[in-house]
Length: 168
Image (cartoon, rainbow, N blue to C red; front, top):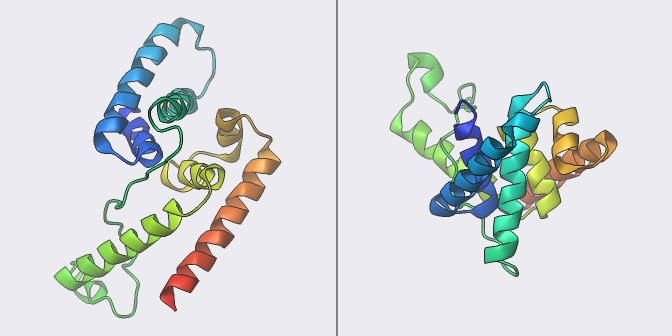
């Protein structure tokens, strides 16, 4: 139960739909419940997110074999507090303009992330949004840690290039 929200967010990123994500998480919870006796790992978070990831990929293969869709928006982020044009650093409160700018930037970021290839997108989401370490991501995706590091670097470079291109 404590990891349900993280599992839902990952499933939502993978499926692109809230209702589909609920189906994936429900399936993952059933699988986790059935496999709880075999759980011997120290990191329950990575274990559960691996089940969600695998369930998400299975669900996508079954329901969307040729087309993948991803979410169009992400929740408002609050990384804009130090921006020079942001008046909130003076008052301590976000203005409606600050919220609109943050929402627009979050939409631009989500749109750029959606353009990444699935293996880069998945690695980036697991690291930056789910805050998993390289070892856990490598274990979940069944690739070496070096591959995780190179995928993350390529994802960040590609994302920066996409955002720069979009800004022009």
